[in-house]
Image (cartoon, rainbow over all chains, first blue to last red; front, top):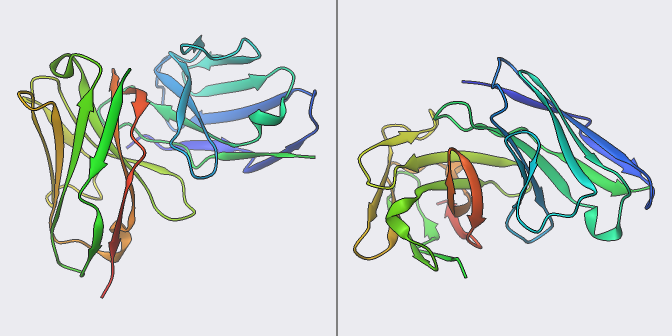
Length: 107
Length: 117
């Protein structure tokens, strides 16, 4: 099983600033990585797939990068609606494991 | 508009069984793999199982292998999850999820399964 490790567990950032979230895979997943956003009481929402492709209707302030074992989600200028929990997920094989999540909170 | 509506959750005793259903609409059901993803209270997401569009291939997380069975009825646009030998650690919101190549494009709102005596 591929283990996905996200850091930090909690990130405190002020609105308007940039946020950088990290995700590391225990072995290479190529570019087969997704990022999801989840707000309290809601289902997750796909943000990024293929490590860097924005999903439909996702604002341009969200960007993904990386390949192999190291990945980054960057939110260029935080809006109030961006404070949520973010998960990465590897899709390199049938065991589609998630990271444990990063909570993005208002500083 | 894609809609995924789960049902069948509830309270069950340890060792018991439950069958979840997910009614899908708004897309060509048999063209897409379907998944179950769960989330224990206050915890992160855990992928549970995936079934191919035809239903011919399925995979499971180690934590549920041998106890859970995923299936689909393409004539009814419905996904199922049969859960046997349930344990306290299976308590979670179970999401029905549609996607391709492992990516989940759409999620249902989830159904809560509580395993407790």
